[in-house]
Length: 150
Image (cartoon, rainbow, N blue to C red):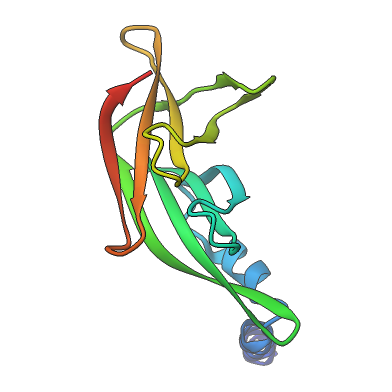
């Protein structure tokens, strides 16, 4: 009887995992326990008319920013990781940007026609907030940290 219940549970899990509409739920249930999404925003970083998904994540004491390319299949939208930058340490912080408080903002800092990503941090040691600027190199599919801090 126990074997039947166990086999039924495994079979149900496999059926749910194979169903594309339920895949995000299964992925969320099986995600690493230490991973926490701090921010998730859709923005057209390079003004090409196609939105990118920018995600700020904290995992194992480190904060990373990820860019995903979005594309559609039938009735669903899929995403593919195309760039990532990981900061060695830091706590999530907030900044005041265009009449709102946020932990992830976008601005054309270097005036090149492409939005840079402003990532806010709070340093518990110094009790200071800092904002780091990341620039997306679409051709190389990577994120570069600009030297200037705000």
